[in-house]
Length: 177
Image 1 (cartoon, helix red, strand yellow):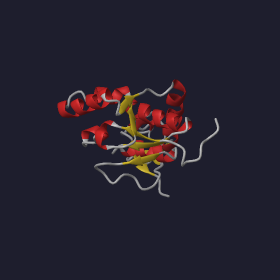
Image 2: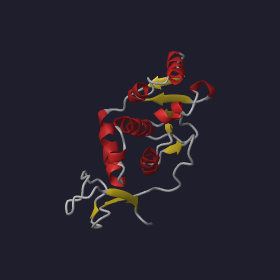
Image 3: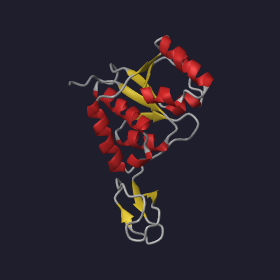
């Protein structure tokens, strides 16, 4: 696909659950907004947020879209590379996959989230993000998983939750840059 110059590309806002919970109002925003079905499931408990969400869908200010399987798989690889895969929920993965897909389709996606792991993966993919209730991350974080008892280190994408040597629960911290 031939990419369009940035001035001709359409900006689109990709909304996480945290955007709705902190009071983001799609009616007060000029550009197109999109989210994933899992976000709708997550906000069902809060009646005011749910009402605003449903009104935005009914008035076409907000669309719900799933990423294709191709982008769902690609995002898992990127999340593993930076060490955030096990911190991201299915909702987070869908959201990032959708942002990646929209970018490939020629849009300029901006993810609205207060989740640092989502922000970190978005930064890795060079997708804009903004936070509403937090400061957001300033730089890309690469993580290491380690045992606090024996100090054995594991790869960022390690599925282990306990140290294979001593059995202590593993922790993670950003690599020093």
